[in-house]
Length: 248
Image 1: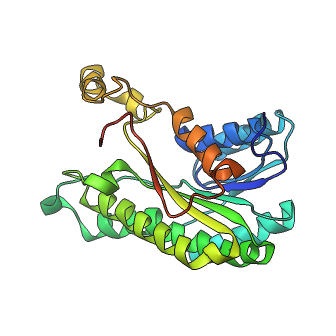
Image 2 (image 1 turned 45 degrees about the vertical axis):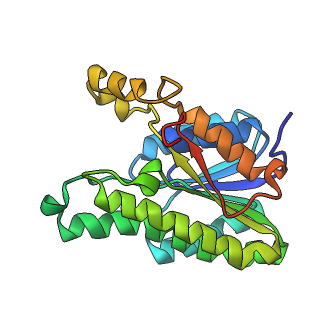
C-alpha cells in the first residue's frame, strides 16, 4: 500500500543519513520528491537517479535552507517544477559541540542559523502555497536533546528546543487552513557519522536504551511517512519521539 501516492514532498538536507532514508521511503510510497543538498553534490546527483528509478518524479536542488532568499527561491522553484508542495520535511541540521565555557559566539550563531532559522525560512516560504491549496503537512526534525538537554550541546539543544516551540506555534496558526505541523525527535540513530565512533562507546549507548539497539534511519523515515500521510490527518502540534524508549 502506497501511503503517499501522488503527493509532492520537499526534504531539506537529503543527500545522506536520515534525509536520504526519508527521500527513499517517500519514493517507495509513491511521493514525488524534491530535495536539497549543499556540499554533497555527487551524493545529491546519485540520489536523484536512485529516486527516479523507483518510478517517481525526483529533483535535487543545491540550496542553503538557512539563507532566507535561497529558501524563498527554492519553494518557488519546487512549486514551478512539481505544481505544489504537499509535504515539507525540514531535516537539514549540523552540530558544533563544545562545553559552554569553550563555546564561541560563532558556534552558537552557526547552529541557530542552520538548524532553527532554516525551519523559519522554508515554512514561511511554503505557507502561502499551502494556504492556497488548503492543505499540507510540515514535519520539522528536532531531537531528544531538544527535550532533555545534553552537556556539551547547549547550542544544538537550544536550536532543537526552539524547533519544538516553532512547530507548535505553526500548528496553531495554520491549522484552520488544513495545514498540519509536527516534529520528530530522533534518539540515537546509527548513521555514517556514528560508524566512525569507537564500537565500545556505541555499544554503551545501545545498552542504555530500553529496546537495546540504536535506531536505523528507516525508523525515522517511517515516522515521516506516517506524519506526511492521511493516516495522521488529525495529528498536529505534536512531537513524536523515535528513540527506542530512551526518554520514557
